[in-house]
Length: 168
Image (cartoon, rainbow, N blue to C red; front, side, top):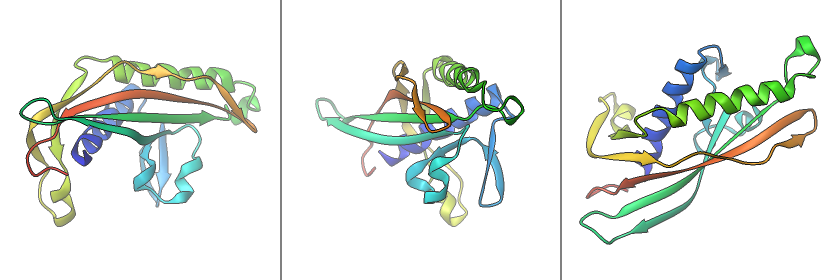
C-alpha cells in the first residue's frame, strides 16, 4: 500500500505544480509545491493554509484474483484565508481556485500511473518502477466549511492498485 500512496502523492504533486507553479510552501527551509502528506510531516505543517493536505483512510483489500486489489481513500483537505491585499474578503474565490486546481489535476488523462517504489531513495538508490499501475476514481468535493478566518474543504478520491508479491 505504501508504494501506491507514494506514487499517487508524486503524481498529484507534479500535476498541481504544473497547473499552478506559484502555489508553494516552505517546510523546514525548503520551498516546494504546496502538497503535503500529513503522516510524513511534522505537526507544524498540519495547519498550512493554501496547501493541499493528503490523509489516507479506509483501506480495503479484495483477494479475488492473482493479486490482491487494494483500495485506499485519500482525503485531501485544503483551506485559505484569502489574500492579505483584499483583507481576506476573497477567500471564497481563493477556495474556488484551489477547487479548480485539484479538479484539473485529478481529471487529467490518464487517471493512472505506473506504481513506483521509493524506498531506495533512503539509501541513495534510484526509484524503482514496479510491475503494476495504480488508478483513481472521480474526485468528490465535500462541503465548504468555515474555520475561524479560513474557508476549507475536504475532497475525497479512491486510489486503487494491485498488491505485488513482497509489497507491504
